[in-house]
Length: 125
Image (cartoon, rainbow, N blue to C red):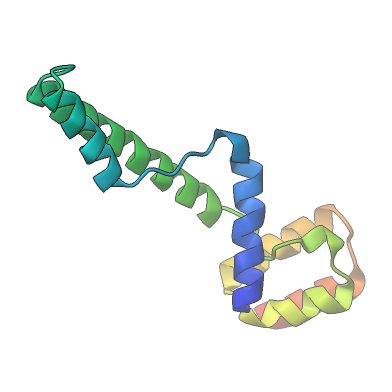
């Protein structure tokens, strides 16, 4: 798979999983600065700030891991349903046997194109 295909696959996964209006990017340093400022102003204790930062970072890590796990389970060929049989066959060369089997099962259940299935069977033999 080319880097362009990889990038498109990641963009598609993000569009499925994330609403862009719900995403906010704040660096760890910026969070730390904001909490340090709250401690200086007496709005929270140092212990509370440390606990809050740790909780926020754990949540972010967990959500990132879930997103990456979902992407790992994503279909091996991005935009598969919009591809012609020739385009699908072209992309088969970059796939591992497990991915080829996944594509074969999907193709059988959906478009069931003989040329694609023959190419998959040939790659798997």
